[in-house]
Image 1: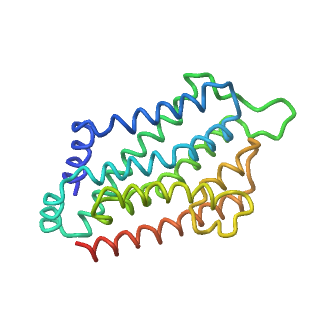
Image 2: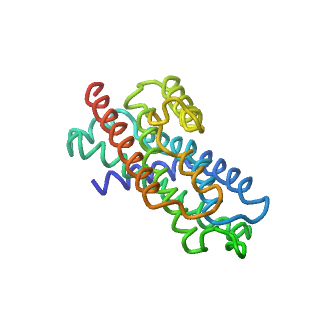
Length: 232
């Protein structure tokens, strides 16, 4: 399975498919962090939300790198479960690199500051940890959405793009405050919202968001696995 992961990542990087998502990431990070300093928790919460559609797009591109015939041969060689898992892990590794860049970039722009004296803002280490959590909650959900929009599921480019764009929009719309069905989307917007003031949210709230994200990802990835088996 390690060889499959390397092969997918090699095709993604060496084939030039990395360029478009990379440019999008640089633009988003430049816009986010080019306007001044803010508390770490707030900055990273916005970063995770803004990068979500790009992470989903990145996952789709990684999964679509492998030609259909080669994917079928890999399924025969290692089995459908390991072949599908290799693709998801490759997409996750690529997304993790983006998240790492998102965590490091604001320091180059001096866009992260410590708490204001006398405020309830989180300390700098706590804000960084909250930022790590925000990106860790966004990444698996983005990979799941990218997988659902991948060619192995949708078969053609246009339906895949439609799933990706619609899913990304629904994450924002359903994640708005007062949404009628927020549980239909991963808690990307909810995480950004609780980190807006820069304070450390209650532990119960962080646990709720984590469980929510894990439950959504479990359902989405189970759906992906079922669709892949049905359409293989």
